Length: 92
Picture 1 (cartoon, rainbow, N blue to C red):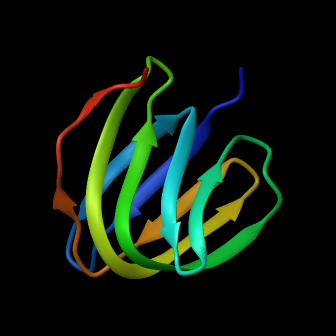
Picture 2: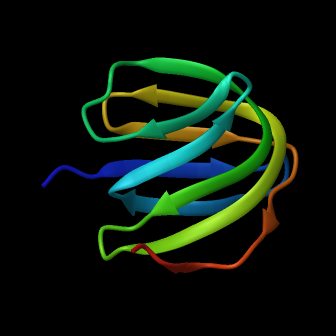
């Protein structure tokens, strides 16, 4: 099974890095789901929640208000000014 290599950073720190099955980001024109082998994409983020779904089903969530996401092959880079932790859970 393919996995995404995710790097999630703010201006001053790495928020999260590792492998994920799926990432969901709040693009300015709507929620955007990212899966392995997606076409290269660059999008501007609005306000909302970034969700990183581990291969085990565990979900990491962070509230953001702007930034960008870059997808190139199975490499996902998320850059934001600030990322506020929200509750984490298991995907259902």
